[in-house]
Length: 91
Picture 1 (cartoon, rainbow, N blue to C red):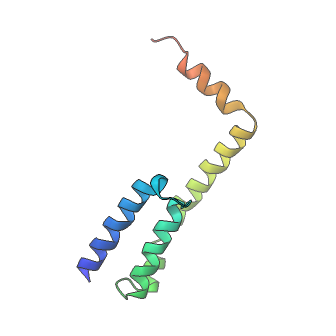
Picture 2: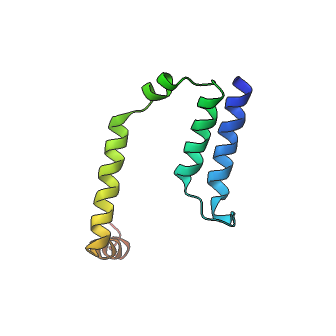
Picture 3: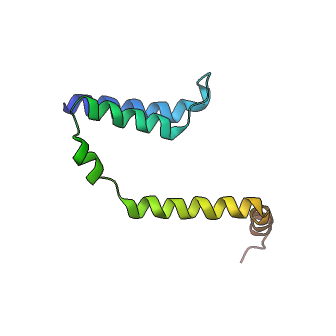
C-alpha cells in the first residue's frame, strides 16, 4: 500500500506540473480528485480517514481569497494596484 501511495502522489505531482502540455484541458483539481479517488477505491485510504483529513478552515480561507481576487479583477482594481506596486520607488 505504501508503494501505491507514493506512486499516486508522484503521478499527481507530475501531472499537475505538466498539465499545460497535455493536448486537452485539465484543471489541477481534476488531477488531485482523480488521485484521491484512486487511493479510496484501492482501500489505501478509508473514506472516513479522507473526510477527517479535510481542513475546512483552509478551504474557507482559500474560498475567501479567490472570491476577493475575482472581485478585484472584475473591478479592475488589481491592475491598478499591481501597476502602482511595480512602479513604486525603492525605499
